[in-house]
Image (cartoon, rainbow over all chains, first blue to last red; front, side, top):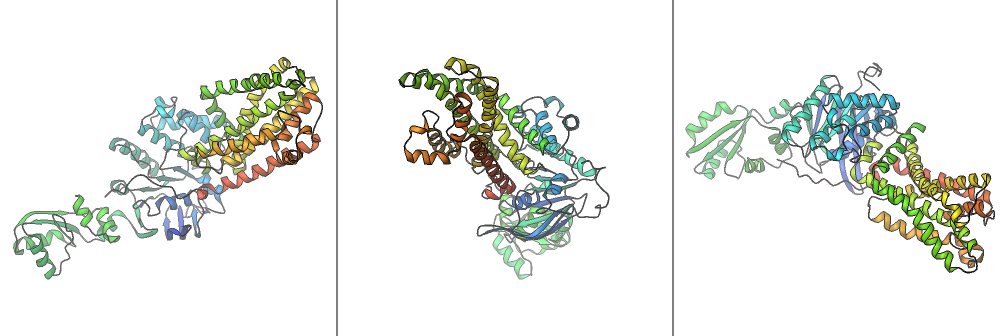
Length: 320
Length: 260
């Protein structure tokens, strides 16, 4: 059950290996052929809007649902035929609370230890150690319903760590937490990842996805891009230029005539360009309208996502 | 496996222990059944008199076991709603251990309530010898396990905490009335004597009554066989439900909107 106890023979096996995964609910196709491979020790984010299939993929990897077609392996174990091995090797934090509210944190962890086959004395030791390491020692003996949201989430993390799993699955683990609690939560996750654990997580907070080594963007049941955050952003080309002028429609015509592809119907024009810093002076000099405001920024993951899903940057422009 | 059943029982009994209201109603309920139902019926049925109170004592025990065992299972439906059960389902606990752990903890809760009634037996004219006392205990254990298996098999299929009690009430009362708990089956109309053969409650009550009165309606070996068979079949069905995990329920809705 501990890191040390696992054999070294499977060191080269991918932490998660998914091929051609399809999941249908009746006539609805929630997953339409997912392929992805997560290396051991990687921090891997699955990013996408609700209904994209994140939770379905997550449930299949967690052995809670069966695929309709294709296969999925966790640390080399098939999630359908080797469920027990998969279950033993992973810890999971769900979107919704999965600790018993009436019981104390210590009791929750103790029971989880028993569910994972620890001896009672061992489970008790492990619970105490986890509570101490997550800074929950003071809150350990109160009913969990009396704890703060941040404490409860940390307890969820502790629950997932009861058997010292080699891979940690987090499904929207910080949902509803304030910024401080979220930061504290991710600090712990970072420490865990640093000790060699694989962390596979889903999120829709862009800044959380940034901490990942690699990100898979998922939309409508398909992976539409899979790369490092930097490479994903580089796909858009160097950067995004936002322009505000006294006559946007005239500026747009002028830009289109010169081969640019301005986007955005809101109060500003947006241009994606490989080298924005180099063309801004030229734009400012030659545009036949008065430029009131110009801004250059590196593309964010949301720029990437909106570009790839074809929803255009107009939405993001309106929101910014 | 044994450790898994133990873990599930620790979980469930710990939760019951914390819930003071449930403990008190758990103690009061069987006594109410015995004294209110027993006194009311006993006073009204002239022919039996004191004999009648002795006659319905096992019936009241059966009632208490049946309702507490089946309603103990409602915790499965609650668990499914809050997600705690997900944490259980993704653990390597053997699925049979989950099913039989749930059955065992429901049966334990029912048995505790049933045992509360035993010291009051002399008040209604029931006196046990050593042998008949253990006969009674054995019948109670078997009955409680069978009723609990019924509750778990039903509850594992429901996701609504409002529907489950309605359905189980609709089924439990007829089962109880048909079981011959309150009147002798020998004098019941023919159709009921036929129907009662399909009522597991009847077999459990008959075993307990046999321990009190020394007379059985069904051959005791048949009752034991039927109840064991029932536990096996229902337990196996529940294992199947837990095996399928979330695939039974519809695609979970999420309340949080995608942020841009």
